[in-house]
Image (cartoon, each protein chain N blue to C red):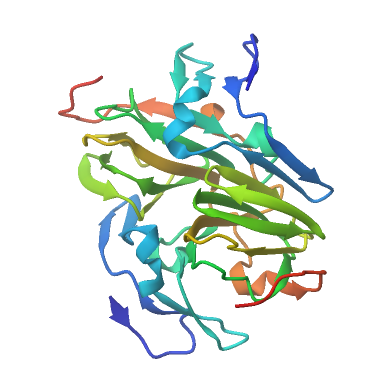
Length: 164
Length: 164
């Protein structure tokens, strides 16, 4: 792990295992359970938060900001927030918790996927005795054009793999 | 689960547990290990594939297409592909596998996060004895404007939660 002492970079302690090529960049953060080894400094509030890694600065995304997160048992997001331009998606990959969205409480657990419009007020907590792990993606509302099968196309590359 | 017999919809058997409000929509898909209960028909190749759920049609995203996925031990993605306009991010949440990107092999495991430019040729496999679970996000390259702390702002909503 790299330790930095700068107020410009958001991440104080961050993953340092990378793979890279002309058209990709990968970072290997280790298990979600161990994400608390990384620390993030909130630039507005100055609070150091463990367990949240933003990926944009690590792998140079241009279409989305993604974070991977762990909440310890009992942890509550410190305040509700909304967004100006960006849609958000929360994807829960382990554990159980609750979100409050515009005052409406919903139970979340592994496999819960929630799309939020920018103006939705959102907060969440881990109300379970096990950790709560999740991915958050933000991207500019209404920016998606073609997608999935219409945007993808088959290409050839050398593989020495036996197909199943 | 709902079963549909249409060639227009991509998903044949899909999750049917939802929560919804004016500014959000949630779908609860259950554990990643059980994603093989859902089936997807590839519209070009006509192949029915278990273990892949696209979220755009389920929760009405406008900025991204996201899928959640499980590969059984030994499974290989049937062909390499690239994209026309969309950046992709792969986030591995369980298991171990390999990706080949432009002919370069990289090992992936829980916490591996890979950003791919549209033209990157990509294929992957589960070369382990346990299942491989992952999230794939696609969004239009260079579409992200402000993000994270610059796009978010604090709002008030009623919460009956004790803060940690």
